Amino acid sequence: MPAEIDFYFDFSSSYSYVATPGIIEIADKRDVSVNWKPILLGVIFNALGHAPPAADSPKMRHAQRDLERCAEAAGLPPFGFPTPFPFAAITASRAFWYLHDSDPDKAVEWAKAVFNASFAERRDCSSPEVLSDIAAGLGHDPQQLLEATATDAVKARFKAVTGEAMERGVFGAPTFFVGDEMFWGGDRLAHLERFLDKA
Amino acid sequence: MPAEIDFYFDFSSSYSYVATPGIIEIADKRDVSVNWKPILLGVIFNALGHAPPAADSPKMRHAQRDLERCAEAAGLPPFGFPTPFPFAAITASRAFWYLHDSDPDKAVEWAKAVFNASFAERRDCSSPEVLSDIAAGLGHDPQQLLEATATDAVKARFKAVTGEAMERGVFGAPTFFVGDEMFWGGDRLAHLERFLDKA
Image 1 (cartoon, each protein chain N blue to C red):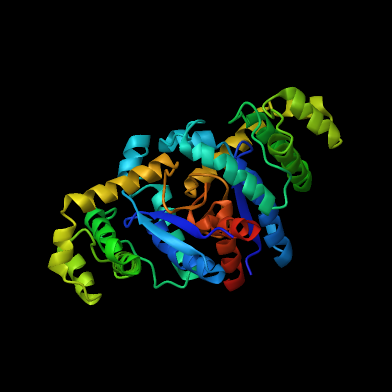
Image 2: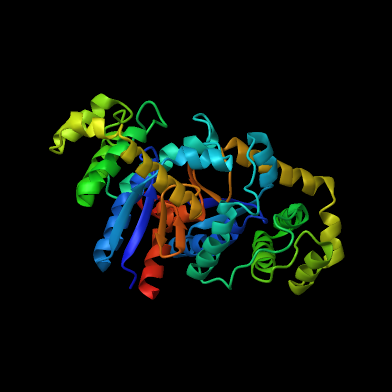
């Protein structure tokens, strides 16, 4: 059985958020580890010439209802988009990679808290104040964490992971890999599960 | 329990094809009827300014593998795109609506056969010869059927259903409705199932 799942996501991706309970459950059941990997999807969209759908488009109107159903099915709190949406997830992502260097589990804890603040509490996670609150709630020094996000090493790390994702063919989020097998979308977790069980 | 499911699809939509066993199973289990409704998605894409992904894009490379997995999971034959793809599904669709006027079940039988010819046998269902073959195999008079697709009544019927879909908010295929509740994508069949069981 493969030892791990790579999980590429963007903090501003609502569909990444609603996929988190599912991927955790699948991995836990099989004692497989999940590598949480926040990326900056905007960079990939720009490179590929993708544009996200307009807020008042039929697609986004459907997405609102769909995400409510997805959150309910995943056992998450009632879903809501924060304002603004999409939001700049760059600081939240860099904080993840800073925490990851010393303790990957703390980084995952951060990711879950940022997702919950964004899509359950509808708080603006592009705001340093909101991120400071979340950091304090998890026992981190908010000022130290925010300062770390401005260092070249952390910036470079985040940029490298986004580049790695694009090279592997990522064009949206969430995207999962088991080895070279790629699965796009939380709605493909059943495929991933079958693949794991056949491997 | 709601009496019916509206199922909007395009004959050239591979994701509509792989959703067919699922929607049939869900409806049969509950004795709910399915209204199969082929539309011309290109008209809706043009109106909304959507462009399908390029054949050599990361998204389409993923789709090839994904559709193989979807077909396998749905118990369909090994999946393959026909050449050309996408193909002009207008004649196949008009034939559906012509058959539908006298016998909706015969129209559904036609839809299944066209889908199978396209994505299992990889035949070009924009070709009158291929459509004639399929028609003959189902016991229809091929010439009569093809001639019927050129009548104003059948053309108008097909156009009207595409317009109806767009008015209801359809922006992709497959799209399902139970009353006003809309579900986009074969990967949302579990949501539709829960919705039916709650209703």
